[in-house]
Image 1 (cartoon, rainbow, N blue to C red):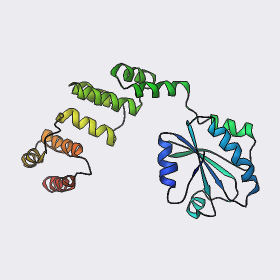
Image 2 (cartoon, helix red, strand yellow):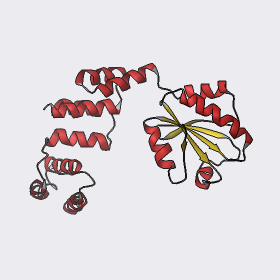
Image 3 (cartoon, rainbow, N blue to C red):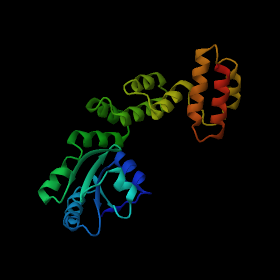
Length: 234
């Protein structure tokens, strides 16, 4: 079953969805004869992947922003997305054999499937096995580091996090490892006390930043404390 995509839903249904599941975007229009031939083939072949690939359809007449984004000059035009980026494409009606080869290239390899299963298992042994297969897998690194923090092994967690580049996800787990898990602490008293030290004490400044990471951007106090930190530093 195809997802009908609009200018308003493109970001969510195609870009964001493709981070976890490959998406095939079919750019078409009701007046396009070849589109009517290609559409059922795409639905059949993508359907056979049993959810490993998702089919999205966008009527270019109804959604000019999508058409403009892809500089569509001829349809049908089919674009494949993975990890939020276009990775493959073709124009014009294709036969079932060609479409099947196109879709097959989007399917995870046996190793990728094994890594995904191990990450889904979520225990320490499985996560370490996943990292043996794919040492730089951020999902496995973050999950294992988080598990180690919960188990009271913060130093190990920080070592594991060094395997991947810093990101929003790794910063939060690293902060938990350095600060400790204090779910009942509202942090105000600690942050207030640290403010007088942040300019001259590197450890105090790191602790202050880590606490803000744990509070997160949705905590209304975070922005205020960041401004206070900037004022003290500069």
